[in-house]
Length: 136
Image (cartoon, rainbow, N blue to C red; front, top):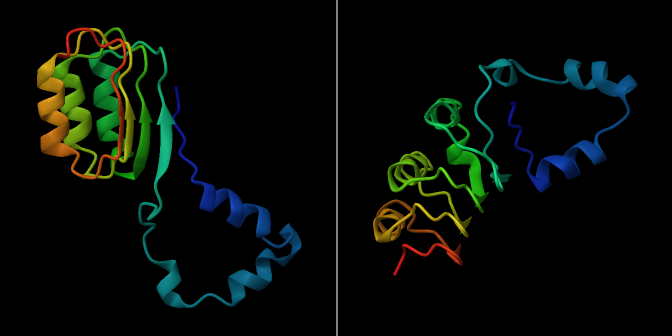
């Protein structure tokens, strides 16, 4: 499955873009510095994998996609396959961007998950661990 992030800022910019007929006029006004190699977005968005089944390959694909540093809100609610090691991989590749995280009903997670969050997610403002019975 393809994962596409779109921040609220990007949505607003698209809504405010001039009609398609003005695109050529905008292109003519660009200078050479705007023709550089595309950079990752500077904005952050959200990703919900609510009740998905996460396998090792799914996690590998997510890490390799380089999307994690651009995610501020991550919903992992109900991921029955999510383990402490998988959460550590996610958090360690997020570049401390996560602000809100839901690991509600992720029953394989233990206290080690909390230690991972403390280590890798210093900017976390909201954490939902309801139903994660192995976290004390």
